[in-house]
Amino acid sequence: MTQPQARIKIAIQKSGRLTEHCLELLQQCGLKYSRGRDQLIGFGENMPVDFLLVRDDDIPGLVRDDVCDLGIVGLNVLEEKRLGYAAEGINEPFQVLQKLDYGHCRLAFAYPEESPLEKAAELDGQTIATSYPKIVGDYLQQNGLNAQVVEFSGAVEIAPSLGRAELICDLVSTGATLAANRLVEGETILDSVACLIQTPVAIPAEKTEWVNRLVERIAGVQQVRGCKYIMMHAPRSALHAITELLPGAESPTVLPLEDADDKVAVHVVCRENVFWETLESLKKAGASSVLVIPIEKMLA
Ligand code: PRT
Ligand code: ZN
Picture 1 (cartoon, rainbow, N blue to C red):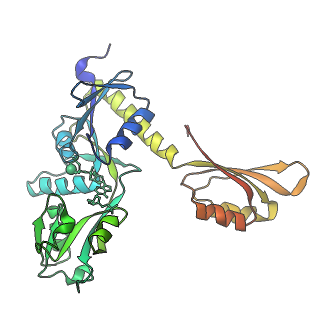
Picture 2 (picture 1 turned 30 degrees about the vertical axis):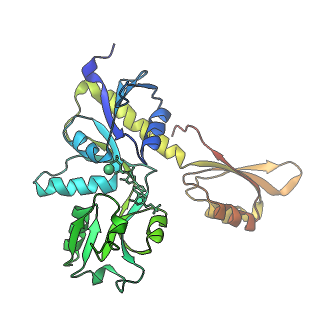
Picture 3 (picture 1 turned 120 degrees about the vertical axis):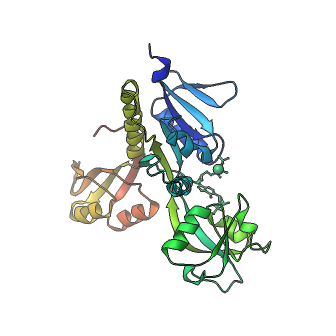
């Protein structure tokens, strides 16, 4: 039986934009779990892996302090915390193992529609409201800009209308929140995505096997999620053009078609997602009966 101290702990967001994605990822790694009565811990039933459900802001600290071996958190939160640690002289507080395929957003400046400001170079002397004062402060310093930063812990987008700031720097994904507040998006200073992080402390021997297995499974799930199996019919003469159109395609399997000398069936694994635009281009290039099929598991 696994000793209690050999169980792996992974910190994930308790309730927010990353939660469902993180739980789904762990399930796809084969983890079956039950939730504690307080709902703050998920106990792995078939692997020595438990997860802690916490606020996303607490995840970097839990991993840095080795309370958890692994964590999943947005790069925006990580970067803000990393700058905080760096200011205290603590370098490399966590290892970023992998960027995941969810939680995409960008940290960008935004200006009121009627503002004469248009680009970051015009920020001197302005006041910027943000929940990410360290990232914004670092950007200003790197670019030799002399603006003031005011920290807002939420509802940053209303700061200009409250007269607290001339502009904001906040996370954007669709842009709907900015538009609803009559703000115009400016320069992006950080492209963010959920990241898998690991404690800076050496993993004890009794845990390494399962930490490595979990990390490998996460990588495997990520790899396969972006992949698609594509099948189509194509004129033999268009084969080259069609292969060029497929994102991240490996050498295709080309099969003859019964009663058609000039046409073949093409099967190919694409290592990137395939969008409608690509299908339309394939059709234009002569392909027909195009099928895009998700891949469940792949062993390289
Ligand atoms: O309670 P807890 O502290 O854990 O949660 P939280 O409220 O701090 O975080 P949460 O759940 O809102 O977001 C978790 C993480 O998701 C963030 O740290 C980002 O890494 C990522 N993420 C992705 C986003 C967004 N997209 C996003 N759009 N986080 C926040 N937003 C907000 C943004 O701040 C703005 O208010 O959504 C609004 C803008 O969205 P659009 O679609 O209108 O542009
Ligand atoms: Zn938070």
